[in-house]
Image (cartoon, rainbow, N blue to C red; front, side, top):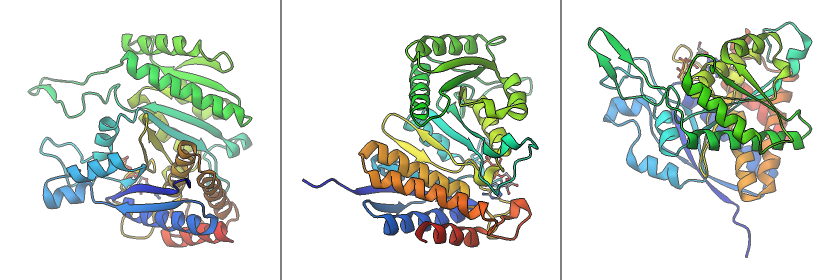
Length: 364
Ligand code: ATP
Protein backbone atom coordinates (compact mmCIF):
# COMPACT_ATOMS: atom_id res chain seq x y z
CA UNK A 1 0.00 0.00 0.00
CA UNK A 2 1.34 3.43 -0.94
CA UNK A 3 2.01 6.13 1.64
CA UNK A 4 -0.73 8.75 1.91
CA UNK A 5 0.85 12.00 0.79
CA UNK A 6 -2.32 14.12 0.93
CA UNK A 7 -2.43 16.60 3.77
CA UNK A 8 -5.62 18.45 4.62
CA UNK A 9 -4.88 21.99 5.76
CA UNK A 10 -7.56 24.28 7.20
CA UNK A 11 -6.62 27.80 6.13
CA UNK A 12 -8.09 30.67 8.16
CA UNK A 13 -6.81 34.00 6.78
CA UNK A 14 -8.86 36.01 9.30
CA UNK A 15 -8.74 39.80 9.21
CA UNK A 16 -6.56 42.73 8.19
CA UNK A 17 -3.08 41.80 6.98
CA UNK A 18 -3.84 38.19 7.99
CA UNK A 19 -5.53 37.82 4.61
CA UNK A 20 -2.62 39.37 2.74
CA UNK A 21 0.13 37.32 4.38
CA UNK A 22 -1.84 34.07 4.10
CA UNK A 23 -2.42 34.65 0.37
CA UNK A 24 1.38 35.04 0.09
CA UNK A 25 2.01 31.91 2.17
CA UNK A 26 -0.39 29.84 0.06
CA UNK A 27 1.55 30.90 -3.05
CA UNK A 28 4.84 29.84 -1.45
CA UNK A 29 3.45 26.50 -0.21
CA UNK A 30 2.07 25.72 -3.66
CA UNK A 31 5.39 26.60 -5.27
CA UNK A 32 7.22 24.34 -2.78
CA UNK A 33 4.81 21.51 -3.50
CA UNK A 34 5.24 21.81 -7.27
CA UNK A 35 8.98 22.25 -7.15
CA UNK A 36 9.90 19.69 -4.50
CA UNK A 37 7.00 17.22 -4.85
CA UNK A 38 6.26 14.20 -2.66
CA UNK A 39 3.31 15.74 -0.80
CA UNK A 40 -0.10 17.15 -1.75
CA UNK A 41 -1.56 19.97 0.27
CA UNK A 42 -5.32 20.34 0.19
CA UNK A 43 -5.66 23.93 1.28
CA UNK A 44 -9.24 24.56 2.40
CA UNK A 45 -9.87 28.23 3.03
CA UNK A 46 -12.51 29.10 5.61
CA UNK A 47 -13.88 32.26 7.19
CA UNK A 48 -13.47 33.16 10.85
CA UNK A 49 -12.64 36.34 12.76
CA UNK A 50 -13.86 39.85 13.42
CA UNK A 51 -15.13 40.65 9.94
CA UNK A 52 -17.22 37.48 9.95
CA UNK A 53 -18.52 38.39 13.44
CA UNK A 54 -19.53 41.83 12.20
CA UNK A 55 -21.51 40.26 9.37
CA UNK A 56 -23.00 37.22 11.10
CA UNK A 57 -22.60 37.54 14.87
CA UNK A 58 -20.35 34.45 14.90
CA UNK A 59 -16.54 34.63 14.90
CA UNK A 60 -15.82 30.89 14.72
CA UNK A 61 -18.71 28.90 13.23
CA UNK A 62 -19.13 25.32 14.43
CA UNK A 63 -18.50 23.81 10.99
CA UNK A 64 -15.20 25.72 10.76
CA UNK A 65 -14.19 24.54 14.23
CA UNK A 66 -15.07 20.97 13.22
CA UNK A 67 -13.08 21.22 9.98
CA UNK A 68 -10.08 22.55 11.93
CA UNK A 69 -10.36 19.62 14.34
CA UNK A 70 -10.39 17.13 11.47
CA UNK A 71 -7.61 18.76 9.42
CA UNK A 72 -3.99 17.63 9.57
CA UNK A 73 -2.99 21.18 10.52
CA UNK A 74 -4.40 24.71 10.67
CA UNK A 75 -2.74 27.69 9.01
CA UNK A 76 -4.00 30.98 10.42
CA UNK A 77 -3.36 34.62 9.50
CA UNK A 78 -4.49 37.00 12.23
CA UNK A 79 -7.86 37.89 13.73
CA UNK A 80 -9.43 40.92 15.33
CA UNK A 81 -10.24 44.50 14.32
CA UNK A 82 -10.16 47.39 16.80
CA UNK A 83 -13.68 48.56 16.07
CA UNK A 84 -15.29 45.11 16.25
CA UNK A 85 -15.79 43.78 19.78
CA UNK A 86 -17.81 41.19 21.63
CA UNK A 87 -20.61 42.68 23.73
CA UNK A 88 -18.42 42.66 26.87
CA UNK A 89 -15.80 44.82 25.11
CA UNK A 90 -13.19 42.12 24.44
CA UNK A 91 -11.50 41.89 21.05
CA UNK A 92 -12.53 39.09 18.72
CA UNK A 93 -9.88 36.41 19.13
CA UNK A 94 -11.01 32.97 17.91
CA UNK A 95 -7.34 31.98 17.66
CA UNK A 96 -7.36 31.89 21.48
CA UNK A 97 -10.50 29.73 21.39
CA UNK A 98 -8.69 27.28 19.09
CA UNK A 99 -5.79 27.06 21.56
CA UNK A 100 -8.16 26.26 24.39
CA UNK A 101 -10.52 23.91 22.53
CA UNK A 102 -7.71 21.85 20.98
CA UNK A 103 -5.50 22.14 24.07
CA UNK A 104 -2.62 23.64 22.11
CA UNK A 105 -0.54 23.98 25.22
CA UNK A 106 2.88 24.69 23.69
CA UNK A 107 3.32 28.05 21.98
CA UNK A 108 6.58 27.70 20.08
CA UNK A 109 8.18 31.05 19.21
CA UNK A 110 11.54 30.76 17.45
CA UNK A 111 13.77 33.81 17.91
CA UNK A 112 16.09 33.42 14.94
CA UNK A 113 18.01 36.16 13.17
CA UNK A 114 17.55 36.62 9.46
CA UNK A 115 20.40 38.32 7.66
CA UNK A 116 19.01 41.51 6.16
CA UNK A 117 16.41 41.98 8.91
CA UNK A 118 18.11 44.51 11.20
CA UNK A 119 18.56 43.84 14.93
CA UNK A 120 18.38 46.84 17.29
CA UNK A 121 21.42 45.43 19.14
CA UNK A 122 24.89 46.63 18.14
CA UNK A 123 26.81 43.53 19.28
CA UNK A 124 27.76 41.33 16.30
CA UNK A 125 26.54 38.24 18.17
CA UNK A 126 22.99 39.60 17.85
CA UNK A 127 23.20 38.97 14.09
CA UNK A 128 23.03 35.20 14.61
CA UNK A 129 20.55 34.61 17.39
CA UNK A 130 18.90 31.22 17.46
CA UNK A 131 16.82 30.40 20.50
CA UNK A 132 13.23 29.35 21.13
CA UNK A 133 10.65 30.57 23.59
CA UNK A 134 7.96 28.07 24.57
CA UNK A 135 4.92 29.72 26.05
CA UNK A 136 2.24 27.77 27.93
CA UNK A 137 -0.92 28.61 26.01
CA UNK A 138 -3.96 27.13 27.77
CA UNK A 139 -3.81 28.34 31.36
CA UNK A 140 -1.76 30.84 33.41
CA UNK A 141 -3.06 34.39 33.60
CA UNK A 142 -5.13 33.95 30.43
CA UNK A 143 -7.24 31.27 32.12
CA UNK A 144 -9.93 33.70 33.25
CA UNK A 145 -10.39 35.05 29.73
CA UNK A 146 -14.06 35.72 29.11
CA UNK A 147 -15.03 35.17 32.75
CA UNK A 148 -15.37 38.69 34.08
CA UNK A 149 -14.83 38.99 37.83
CA UNK A 150 -15.57 42.57 38.65
CA UNK A 151 -17.24 44.43 41.47
CA UNK A 152 -18.66 47.57 39.88
CA UNK A 153 -16.14 50.36 39.75
CA UNK A 154 -14.29 49.05 42.78
CA UNK A 155 -12.25 46.07 41.69
CA UNK A 156 -11.57 43.49 38.98
CA UNK A 157 -9.78 40.16 39.34
CA UNK A 158 -8.00 37.83 36.95
CA UNK A 159 -6.92 34.35 37.85
CA UNK A 160 -3.53 32.68 37.50
CA UNK A 161 -4.13 28.98 36.95
CA UNK A 162 -1.20 26.56 37.06
CA UNK A 163 -2.00 22.84 37.01
CA UNK A 164 0.24 19.81 37.41
CA UNK A 165 -1.18 18.33 34.18
CA UNK A 166 -0.55 21.57 32.28
CA UNK A 167 3.00 21.87 33.58
CA UNK A 168 4.02 18.26 33.07
CA UNK A 169 2.99 18.21 29.41
CA UNK A 170 4.55 21.65 28.83
CA UNK A 171 7.91 20.74 30.38
CA UNK A 172 8.08 17.32 28.70
CA UNK A 173 7.42 19.00 25.35
CA UNK A 174 10.11 21.59 26.13
CA UNK A 175 12.78 19.09 27.13
CA UNK A 176 11.98 16.87 24.12
CA UNK A 177 12.33 19.97 21.95
CA UNK A 178 15.70 20.78 23.56
CA UNK A 179 16.82 17.19 22.92
CA UNK A 180 15.97 17.55 19.24
CA UNK A 181 17.92 20.79 19.06
CA UNK A 182 20.84 19.20 20.86
CA UNK A 183 20.86 16.42 18.26
CA UNK A 184 21.26 19.20 15.65
CA UNK A 185 24.34 20.53 17.46
CA UNK A 186 22.66 23.26 19.54
CA UNK A 187 23.52 23.77 23.23
CA UNK A 188 20.77 21.69 24.87
CA UNK A 189 19.77 24.00 27.72
CA UNK A 190 16.35 24.90 29.13
CA UNK A 191 15.68 28.09 31.09
CA UNK A 192 12.53 28.11 33.22
CA UNK A 193 11.27 31.70 33.42
CA UNK A 194 8.92 32.58 36.29
CA UNK A 195 8.26 34.88 39.22
CA UNK A 196 8.68 32.19 41.86
CA UNK A 197 10.11 34.67 44.36
CA UNK A 198 6.72 36.40 44.66
CA UNK A 199 3.87 34.15 43.46
CA UNK A 200 2.97 30.78 44.93
CA UNK A 201 1.57 29.66 41.56
CA UNK A 202 4.97 30.31 39.98
CA UNK A 203 6.80 28.47 42.76
CA UNK A 204 4.60 25.46 41.93
CA UNK A 205 5.45 25.92 38.23
CA UNK A 206 9.17 25.84 39.08
CA UNK A 207 8.76 22.83 41.37
CA UNK A 208 7.23 20.75 38.56
CA UNK A 209 9.89 22.01 36.13
CA UNK A 210 12.57 20.56 38.44
CA UNK A 211 10.73 17.23 38.67
CA UNK A 212 10.53 16.84 34.89
CA UNK A 213 14.09 18.14 34.38
CA UNK A 214 15.34 15.21 36.46
CA UNK A 215 14.22 12.87 33.64
CA UNK A 216 16.48 14.71 31.15
CA UNK A 217 20.03 14.59 32.56
CA UNK A 218 21.47 15.30 29.07
CA UNK A 219 19.91 18.79 29.07
CA UNK A 220 21.26 21.64 31.20
CA UNK A 221 18.59 23.46 33.20
CA UNK A 222 18.48 26.89 34.79
CA UNK A 223 15.93 29.12 36.53
CA UNK A 224 15.43 32.81 35.87
CA UNK A 225 13.00 35.44 37.07
CA UNK A 226 11.02 37.13 34.32
CA UNK A 227 12.28 40.65 35.13
CA UNK A 228 15.93 39.56 34.93
CA UNK A 229 15.13 37.60 31.76
CA UNK A 230 13.72 40.70 30.07
CA UNK A 231 17.01 42.45 30.79
CA UNK A 232 19.18 39.53 29.73
CA UNK A 233 17.27 39.06 26.48
CA UNK A 234 18.59 42.53 25.62
CA UNK A 235 22.06 42.26 27.25
CA UNK A 236 23.06 38.73 26.23
CA UNK A 237 20.31 36.97 24.24
CA UNK A 238 22.91 34.66 22.62
CA UNK A 239 23.15 32.78 25.94
CA UNK A 240 19.64 31.32 25.63
CA UNK A 241 18.77 28.04 23.94
CA UNK A 242 15.21 27.02 24.92
CA UNK A 243 13.17 29.10 27.32
CA UNK A 244 9.85 27.99 28.84
CA UNK A 245 7.35 30.17 30.66
CA UNK A 246 3.77 30.94 31.69
CA UNK A 247 1.17 32.23 29.22
CA UNK A 248 1.16 36.01 29.83
CA UNK A 249 4.88 36.20 30.57
CA UNK A 250 5.48 34.34 27.30
CA UNK A 251 3.13 36.67 25.45
CA UNK A 252 5.25 39.63 26.50
CA UNK A 253 8.69 38.04 26.12
CA UNK A 254 7.91 36.66 22.67
CA UNK A 255 7.29 40.19 21.36
CA UNK A 256 10.56 41.27 22.97
CA UNK A 257 12.25 38.34 21.23
CA UNK A 258 10.66 39.30 17.91
CA UNK A 259 12.03 42.82 18.39
CA UNK A 260 15.55 41.42 18.74
CA UNK A 261 15.48 39.78 15.32
CA UNK A 262 13.80 42.45 13.23
CA UNK A 263 10.23 42.73 14.50
CA UNK A 264 6.86 41.10 14.07
CA UNK A 265 7.14 40.87 10.29
CA UNK A 266 9.75 38.11 10.62
CA UNK A 267 8.48 36.28 13.75
CA UNK A 268 6.77 32.93 13.05
CA UNK A 269 4.96 30.76 15.58
CA UNK A 270 3.26 27.43 16.20
CA UNK A 271 0.72 26.40 18.82
CA UNK A 272 1.07 22.71 19.37
CA UNK A 273 -1.01 20.16 21.28
CA UNK A 274 -0.99 16.39 21.51
CA UNK A 275 -2.17 15.72 17.97
CA UNK A 276 -3.24 19.10 16.61
CA UNK A 277 -1.42 22.30 15.78
CA UNK A 278 -2.12 25.82 14.53
CA UNK A 279 0.58 27.80 12.70
CA UNK A 280 0.39 31.57 12.50
CA UNK A 281 2.67 34.62 12.44
CA UNK A 282 3.20 36.29 15.84
CA UNK A 283 1.77 39.55 14.57
CA UNK A 284 -1.81 40.72 14.69
CA UNK A 285 -4.01 42.19 11.96
CA UNK A 286 -2.05 45.49 11.80
CA UNK A 287 -5.00 47.73 10.84
CA UNK A 288 -2.56 50.64 10.32
CA UNK A 289 -1.11 49.01 7.20
CA UNK A 290 -3.88 46.67 6.01
CA UNK A 291 -4.94 46.82 2.39
CA UNK A 292 -1.78 48.70 1.36
CA UNK A 293 0.47 45.82 0.27
CA UNK A 294 2.91 46.87 3.03
CA UNK A 295 2.87 43.78 5.25
CA UNK A 296 6.00 41.69 5.42
CA UNK A 297 4.82 38.13 4.64
CA UNK A 298 8.01 36.48 6.01
CA UNK A 299 6.55 35.65 9.45
CA UNK A 300 3.54 33.90 7.91
CA UNK A 301 5.66 32.13 5.28
CA UNK A 302 8.05 30.84 7.97
CA UNK A 303 5.03 29.71 10.00
CA UNK A 304 4.03 27.73 6.90
CA UNK A 305 7.52 26.19 6.90
CA UNK A 306 7.11 25.26 10.59
CA UNK A 307 3.83 23.58 9.63
CA UNK A 308 5.51 21.51 6.92
CA UNK A 309 8.27 20.52 9.34
CA UNK A 310 5.74 19.44 11.99
CA UNK A 311 3.71 17.51 9.39
CA UNK A 312 6.90 15.86 8.12
CA UNK A 313 7.79 14.70 11.62
CA UNK A 314 4.30 13.36 12.26
CA UNK A 315 3.77 11.60 8.95
CA UNK A 316 7.35 10.60 8.15
CA UNK A 317 7.04 12.42 4.80
CA UNK A 318 10.65 13.49 4.26
CA UNK A 319 9.53 15.73 1.37
CA UNK A 320 7.66 17.96 3.83
CA UNK A 321 10.76 18.49 5.95
CA UNK A 322 12.78 19.16 2.82
CA UNK A 323 10.24 21.75 1.67
CA UNK A 324 10.30 23.41 5.11
CA UNK A 325 14.09 23.77 4.96
CA UNK A 326 13.91 25.05 1.38
CA UNK A 327 11.33 27.72 2.30
CA UNK A 328 13.41 28.91 5.25
CA UNK A 329 16.51 29.08 3.08
CA UNK A 330 14.60 31.01 0.41
CA UNK A 331 13.33 33.57 2.95
CA UNK A 332 16.83 34.04 4.40
CA UNK A 333 18.46 34.40 1.03
CA UNK A 334 15.83 36.86 -0.28
CA UNK A 335 16.47 39.20 2.66
CA UNK A 336 20.23 38.57 2.97
CA UNK A 337 20.81 39.41 -0.69
CA UNK A 338 19.47 42.91 -0.10
CA UNK A 339 17.18 42.38 -3.10
CA UNK A 340 14.17 43.16 -0.93
CA UNK A 341 13.76 45.62 1.90
CA UNK A 342 10.34 45.71 3.51
CA UNK A 343 8.46 48.81 4.62
CA UNK A 344 9.08 48.28 8.33
CA UNK A 345 12.83 48.60 7.62
CA UNK A 346 12.39 51.75 5.59
CA UNK A 347 12.30 49.93 2.27
CA UNK A 348 9.71 50.01 -0.51
CA UNK A 349 9.08 46.33 -1.07
CA UNK A 350 5.57 45.19 -0.30
CA UNK A 351 3.95 41.82 0.30
CA UNK A 352 3.80 40.83 -3.39
CA UNK A 353 7.35 41.81 -4.24
CA UNK A 354 8.81 39.99 -1.21
CA UNK A 355 6.74 36.90 -1.97
CA UNK A 356 7.93 36.94 -5.60
CA UNK A 357 11.56 37.16 -4.44
CA UNK A 358 11.11 34.22 -2.03
CA UNK A 359 9.42 32.06 -4.69
CA UNK A 360 12.14 32.90 -7.24
CA UNK A 361 14.77 31.59 -4.82
CA UNK A 362 12.70 28.56 -3.90
CA UNK A 363 12.27 27.36 -7.47
CA UNK A 364 15.48 28.83 -8.90
P1 ATP B 1 -2.38 41.83 18.46
O1 ATP B 1 -2.89 42.46 19.72
O2 ATP B 1 -3.43 41.11 17.69
O3 ATP B 1 -1.12 41.03 18.64
P2 ATP B 1 -1.31 44.38 17.82
O4 ATP B 1 -2.29 45.43 17.48
O5 ATP B 1 -0.65 44.37 19.14
O6 ATP B 1 -1.99 42.98 17.51
P3 ATP B 1 0.01 44.08 15.34
O7 ATP B 1 -1.28 44.05 14.60
O8 ATP B 1 0.84 42.88 15.24
O9 ATP B 1 -0.14 44.41 16.83
O10 ATP B 1 0.84 45.35 14.85
C1 ATP B 1 1.81 46.01 15.66
C2 ATP B 1 2.67 46.89 14.76
O11 ATP B 1 3.55 46.08 13.98
C3 ATP B 1 1.86 47.70 13.78
O12 ATP B 1 2.42 49.00 13.63
C4 ATP B 1 1.98 46.94 12.50
O13 ATP B 1 1.89 47.74 11.36
C5 ATP B 1 3.34 46.28 12.60
N1 ATP B 1 3.33 44.97 11.93
C6 ATP B 1 2.73 43.85 12.38
N2 ATP B 1 2.88 42.86 11.50
C7 ATP B 1 3.59 43.35 10.48
C8 ATP B 1 4.06 42.80 9.24
N3 ATP B 1 3.83 41.52 8.89
N4 ATP B 1 4.75 43.59 8.42
C9 ATP B 1 5.01 44.87 8.74
N5 ATP B 1 4.60 45.45 9.88
C10 ATP B 1 3.88 44.71 10.74
